Length: 323
Ligand SMILES: CC(C)(COP(=O)(O)OP(=O)(O)OC[C@H]1O[C@@H](n2cnc3c(N)ncnc32)[C@H](O)[C@@H]1OP(=O)(O)O)[C@@H](O)C(=O)NCCC(=O)NCCS
Image (cartoon, rainbow, N blue to C red; front, top):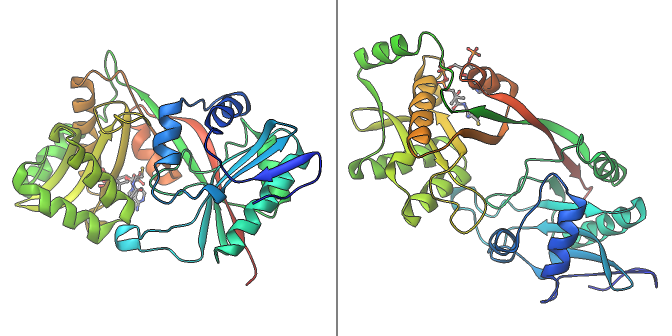
């Protein structure tokens, strides 16, 4: 793809562009630096990566803008191809003119792929943020608004200290005893739980949660990185924790979640006990903090009882393109 004026050249990714992209990223997105292994794993090795969807704007030979557009080429387990959807997972531009040119090219790319419901930015699995951090990057938020994206929802990132101690709700032991009387036990899974755990995820949650658990277990993660609530062998809830964005993402680290309880079982304390047990296991693996990127205000109340505080707010953005 080659578009643009004499001064600005817009094209898709070509091998050799990687250093320029990572360099621009680290100067343009100062609160979200990455390194080359993260760029490799989450962008170049993402199975749905299409060089034409990696939209790069150059002035002379200098990279000045970038939008990473994603459309599914392969089905996402039980969520399928999610036809009609497109995602911008990364966006950066130094000036409104560059932003406008990059987002127009992104629009052309999505139109050619038949995508008319566009999102910034939660493409799974390889998203970087749920949406735009408008407080860190107000100029990028404005460029997206000017291009017709609207604010769709809020996603809260939260962090909690786990060291030297962590906060617990005062009634947590009592809740656990009450659940045990009902035959509900909260523990790490054993080999005999694996099939029930995956069934639970497939039946109750989006394909991304199923995939996340499957990939992490298949990579060799310790079962202590998972917590399940079970009645007999029936899984009623679960959480997991993991590491960063690099190749060893699946190992123990500070990233908490996903975390979910079967709808019919919510509100009776399972989530609190699962969270407690998972945070304890994170401490035992050496983590001093826990964090996650994406929750809503209601679940935030539960996290606050464990010492989590909102650390960042993201705005999920959406654009509907008339067919
Ligand atoms: C969040 C969740 C895991 C909590 O499990 P739970 O067993 O209901 O939790 P507890 O009974 O220990 O605590 C109740 C608290 O959970 C949260 N909660 C309950 N139902 C919820 C729901 N449908 N969505 C989001 N949060 C919910 C609330 O903070 C609630 O506290 P409140 O009574 O003051 O509103 C569970 O509700 C769930 O699976 N929600 C959908 C998935 C989700 O939002 N996961 C967390 C995203 S990071």
